[in-house]
Length: 273
Length: 300
Image 1 (tube, each protein chain N blue to C red):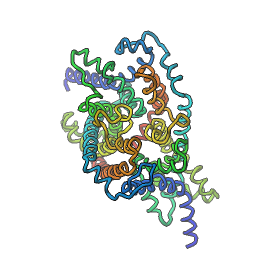
Image 2 (tube, each protein chain N blue to C red; image 1 turned 120 degrees about the vertical axis):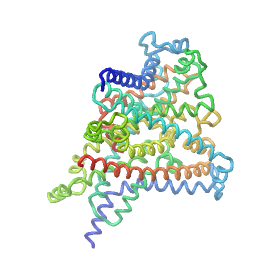
Image 3 (cartoon, each protein chain N blue to C red; image 1 turned 90 degrees about the vertical axis):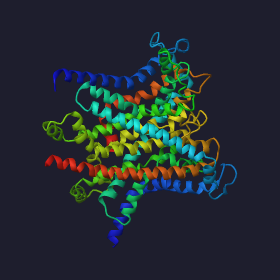
Image 4 (tube, rainbow over the protein chains, first blue to last red; image 1 turned 90 degrees about the horizontal axis):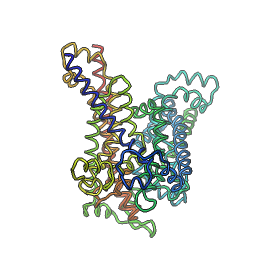
């Protein structure tokens, strides 16, 4: 290629990359800048690019408008429980499906695969009615238990275990290890990368989930963070955008921090699906 | 035989939590939805059996075809744009260097951040009076459309916000696929005198075609399930223009308290998503088959 053409190519490419970065980052920047403004400032000149100073009024307002500490704790308890349960239950189930022979194995595997087809948007009405008649609406159980098992997680663990040699399991059994010992202490460490990616993805997914908690909760007691932040929009008369954006920053920061630290694992979990 | 059955018993014990949970929260709800769909119930008075009335009412009032049409239009915009953009960005950003890594991270981060955060952020940007997008268009001397207030514009606005959110997903899947295209194939083609465009047409694209099918079907299924963005940004309005499938189901059961009507919608929705998922599984099998020729190509 001739040098001038090449320089032109590099120039066009760089411009395209910078444009893409701007399209995806400017909204975050705008969110953060708005969150440092005061309410009169937003009202007077909403499109002024910079806040007058780094004012924290909007953040203080978030803390008085919603029980944010409580919601954050609810979110953490919910997503950590779900992610841990999914990993803990997928291991024995995946092991039984991949490494043991028993009557009904095909049926059990078929059930797991069939459940991959059914999103929560299809099951929520009956599950809501079920929890309603058991007086469990608005409890942590209604948020966690329906997701304790991930069909996808079970499937992925089973696939990963297929490539683990039987000799490892037989050697552990000869040493007198029980079935559960084999599953958690021998196979668990071998599958660590798969399980870590699964855990991380599940945590981030459920931390951000809005649909299920919206349907299953009615008050602050177990309401997770995304719902409380969405309610900021409805508090008071007229939307105070600086307050909503401050809530938004608080909602997104933990996920963006996890993403910055563990980008490789999250990308792996997504590419794995 | 007793040794075998004791082994069976042990395997089932390991599987018990999984089978029970899936049975209770996936299989039973499917059956219950089918049952409720042939009844009328408002969660207060006893339910009545109504046969196929719920389905007939949805079909006759035109509600079903409206909802399906709006959902398909939305999904069509989201899937075509996010797939094309994701492919373009993957080709653009598939190279070493800090700027490229940073751009990949920036684009993918939108896919990771909560839908609520993204929807609230764009609600502010698209605000009729004070939003940054509105002010920007006005600064150019044009009249800004009512992004979320005009029934013709609102579905497109929501679709574009969704494209912004999910393009990172298709980009990541395409990047993973690009990294599996053997470098030697490109080098061989370049040695044969093929230019960049011809190399794309004859080397890259054949390897990416199965991935594209996979991205299209998964994105289609995901955009059929759109809910958060609607609930936060438009609540299905204006004049129902953004009432897509899942939002319509939610509205029937929690606002109109019509469990039967909502369940009939669920059943129709399930059949649609189920059909798509089967196509998806087929595309996935094609994907694993599709990589075989390129592997052969390298050894040849």
